[in-house]
Length: 79
Image 1 (cartoon, helix red, strand yellow):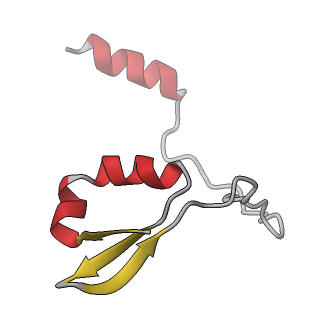
Image 2 (spheres, one colour):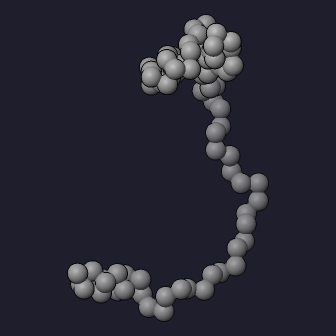
């Protein structure tokens, strides 16, 4: 397992993340004291889960009373 100080990690974060992506772990040191670890995530880990329930939000009233595309075209024509 590799160890690295916070300052060096800040300077070489991309390199260290590539190392972790290859399957290695990195221990982060703060004044030679371990404070955290960066470890590879499981390949089959589901980071985004479907919602547990569907939220039915009330329809919001439009803030403009004309077609947004026409309004944008008119605004751009003024320039």
